[in-house]
Image (cartoon, rainbow, N blue to C red; front, side, top):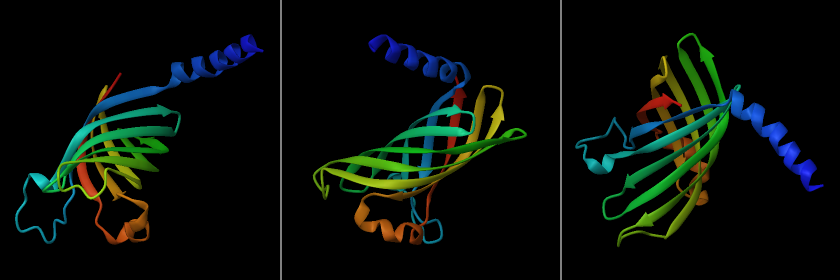
Length: 163
């Protein structure tokens, strides 16, 4: 039985690894409202790293972000799974998934938040390098999930490298 399980795992993983595309890179996002921004400071931005794994049109991604909130900050992991399509030199993608944030600092309301996110991306592919735009509808916890689309999305840029 154990040999059959190992063989089944190898039969599934080898083709996936052969055709999978891994991208890693950085992401920087503006998380404020550009229409009412009177002053833009460090607290208006979030930044971090991103990794994407794509098999066919299916794409999974994780973004690890530093999110400042004034008196405290959060280390957030936004994960999503969705679809991504190549159109000429562009890659269009959409995904949805859970996220969690570990709040750090003395003014943090709770230690850990669990929420969800909806992500839309557009990348321009230049060989193994891509640069693109990303937007996240970010919900920090499930108590505010009903108002997800009443807030403006986080908008930003990504720079990715195919490995």
